[in-house]
Image 1 (cartoon, rainbow, N blue to C red):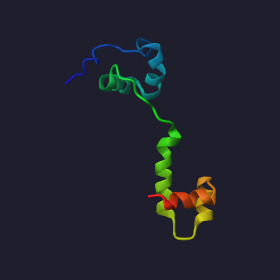
Image 2 (tube, rainbow, N blue to C red):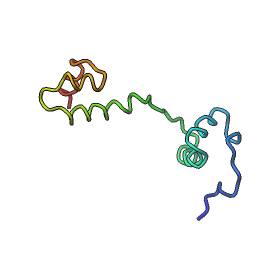
Image 3 (cartoon, rainbow, N blue to C red):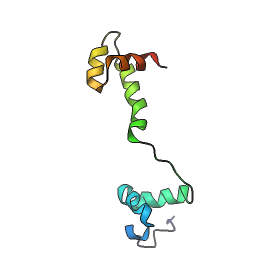
Image 4 (spheres, rainbow, N blue to C red):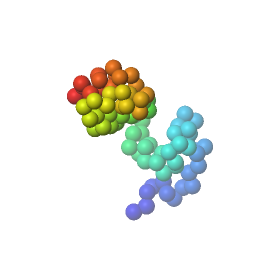
Length: 90
C-alpha cells in the first residue's frame, strides 16, 4: 500500500521552518512518520547524556569484577567515588 505522502515530491522546505532541521537530520521519510505519529503534540527530546547515562551505568555494572574501581573510573571518565555510587545503585 502506498503511503499518502508518496505521490508528492516532498522537499525539506515544505516543512514548517521550526521542523526543517529535524527533517534534515532524520530524513524526509522519517520526518513524515514522526508527523503522522505525533502530529500536533509537543514532544520533549531528551539530552543525549540523559539517554546514554543508564547505558553507561549498566556497562560499568557488567564490567565490575569486585575490585576494578580505578580502571572503570578511567575508562568512563568518572571519579572512583562516582563509580562506587553507580555500583551501589540498583
